[in-house]
Length: 311
Ligand code: ACO
Image (tube, rainbow, N blue to C red; front, top):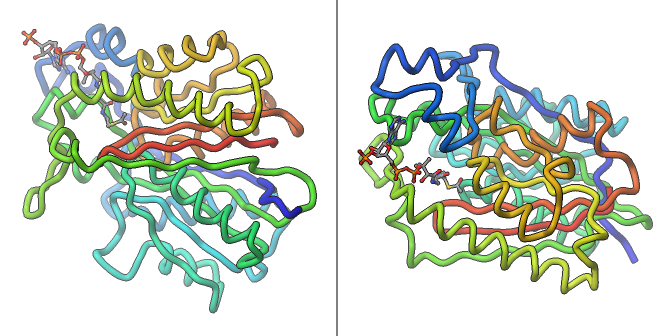
């Protein structure tokens, strides 16, 4: 049996940091309100000339280095992004060119905050069926460009960044399973309508649905693999709101010490949040080889998904 194994991880955050205090100066909000309702303390914001491909490229280079892999060996690039550089070509093609890779398939996946899990699902399926042997899976977002910085109900929530993994075909596990779902019924609860520039969101409704759905996807993932909650070493969730993350952890009976939390420093970076969190916990030594990780995400669409990974 062939698995797709995570051979390396990488991430990138723009240099500019905007704290809650900075936002207090420009809108009717407070550091206390933002921390209590969301757990967010600060977010990174891309420079004027910095785009999804720039950040994704940096994250990809780090992941390739950790995986000890030459870019020329990559035979698949999948990018999860809601904020591509251009309408077309895809951000994946731009990153492919800048890595000097030729001929591999390269495409973007648009599943908003679930984008990385969707991208991982597609790449995993290609690797285990022999369609690719070394894949780059990237989540990269410049949400600051679709955030209305005069709207306090959304501006405090989002940030920019990128994360990446290198998958390689291996006889050792490996991604054990991936799960993806969507329900377009809820599309107008979280959207950027065509012709408009900014995110519109019904925060309360998104919150309730996210908590319920993350519980059900976790149950589905564990049941598929015959794994108990207690077998999990780490939950690496999408980073939207600390209250959503804590509720997901409670449902898994996991103490917060086994949950990777970056929302305080990065805010919600949509498709970038899971690979960013993963890379940070790998590089600081919390996540170790051989451990069992549950990745789970929920986002606009609604879309949701998960992956169970033997790291
Ligand atoms: N600063 C101060 N006050 C604020 C702010 C702000 N930034 N934003 C809203 N308020 C006010 C509201 O106007 C309201 O005032 P009122 O009672 O006088 O009307 C009050 O605070 C409470 O507002 P609620 O919207 O009820 O606050 P809630 O506790 O639901 O928190 C939040 C709002 C943080 C948006 C929450 O609903 C949430 O996180 N939802 C999930 C949304 C999300 O994460 N979306 C991201 C994309 S999807 C995903 O990634 C999962």
